[in-house]
Image (cartoon, rainbow, N blue to C red):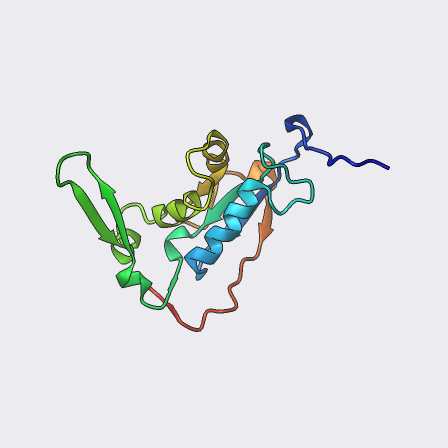
Length: 157
């Protein structure tokens, strides 16, 4: 009888490609699902110090939804680096702007471990597109239906 836990080696990892359609999906719930897949926590042989997650392709990222009044009330802050250079923008301005996929990208990034080289590497396995097409057909991705059942108080943009 063996009393040690088998650790996954980087050479033993088999990464899959998955495609998720984000249309009408709630941002937080979708980001949680994506972060779990990127880290590999859905696997029975998950090892915290090994990149054992999947590649995730997200389509229709500009059609994500927020529950309640978060579309108008959720504020994203950043600093320019200059004195008094704090900037802010609401979620509906970002979704209606030039790079609406950043809402989902930042939500996933903030669910990964902070200031970690492994987390930065895992984030490179996330591909987000605003359209329904992607250039990753050669990898034979598996399509995962992410349907949110609690869409009763979802606001469209």
